Length: 272
Image 1 (cartoon, helix red, strand yellow):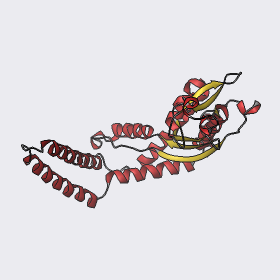
Image 2: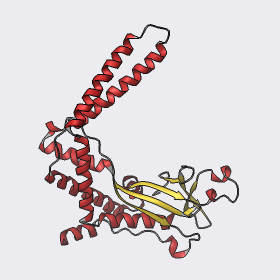
Image 3: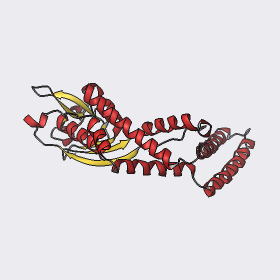
Image 4: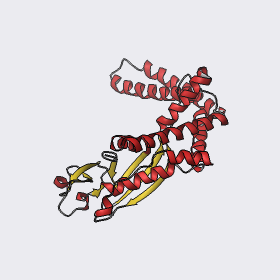
């Protein structure tokens, strides 16, 4: 199911699971074991109808992935900023080198202290210092993992990422339920349910894996020697919405979402 195990409850942080309920076997979300844990009458025992939530989430995803060129600008700017953050600046590089040298001196001093009655505490300090040195080494390696992406490369990566996400929508339109979970795992950054208000706050993202895949493909084709260590990309926040669910769900409320896939998005792109 779309959000089973991905959605959490606002006050407890516990996962909500999809369950069948009612005489018609319809699907709801509720906290697993909530009936045993929470007192009778607690809002934490409430359940949320799945169909209207799925419909709202999937309609938002389709809308976002068809909102060109605004989507392209948002993703390109975020990739540019992450690339700048990755490379840092000369002052930051020099500061990290100086900090690493101080830590190395501390490490050597701590090693010299071994052989006494406090070896356990000394080894803990040594491990902590070693971890700090490794963190700086990793950061320096990331800063050197490749040159700045060019404007043309960022444009190509952005276009590729959008195409990959639209392909995912098209697979869902063709396969239906089997592809539903893959859509949620990729695009839903978080889903937090307020059972008292029957609302769900949902964040939609560009998955980091989609960006990394396109950057990796670009590097392999053009300049593999420049990307000795793959930079770590972060998800890009696209939008956040609050889905208000009805207290009573009947008839049209249970209508399933009907995907249109990525074809409409591609037609918009060509028309533009």
